[in-house]
Length: 252
Image (cartoon, rainbow, N blue to C red; front, side, top):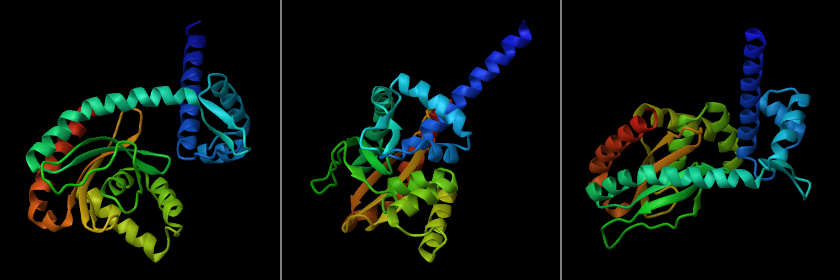
């Protein structure tokens, strides 16, 4: 009997792991995927994918796109995402407040979702001239400090896929090689930079981290470029301290 119980437990854990792999594959594909595409990307047999997606659909974790776009994440996951977002915002709010207090600049919290950086929270800066975005705004990955920070901490293959999707460039091209060098620098330093790349007149520094569910988040400080050079050393010191606190929080 104990042997059978052990086999059932291992089988149950395997099913959960495979279901998680399928959900992760669908996470960045808003328009949906076919069973064959899911099987290929998750490296699972098509029959296994069909069985697991049937169970996930019954719980409304995934749905079939009525416009024929394939299988995509379902509404039930939205409730989990909202709960997770609230928890992340709550846990990071004190750090955002500390960064703004210490630098006088706006501090943002964003999450990587559907191929873009979505703003979850913001503490406005103390200067009259300051950068402000709205919660829910979506920014690109390859030209922003928060997006580049997230790309730098994920597996290289996924970063390449997101780079190609956003830019239309081959990761093996000259532009792709520049992109790889930029990510290597961010990995070595821990901080990512946007020097007038996304919006002329605004520069930013940020760092990324992964939460318990595997979602990528970033905290960044955008600054009017006219005072960026003067405050850059202070921003770097403050963000390194904030990064250490966040990484300690999410690894304990």
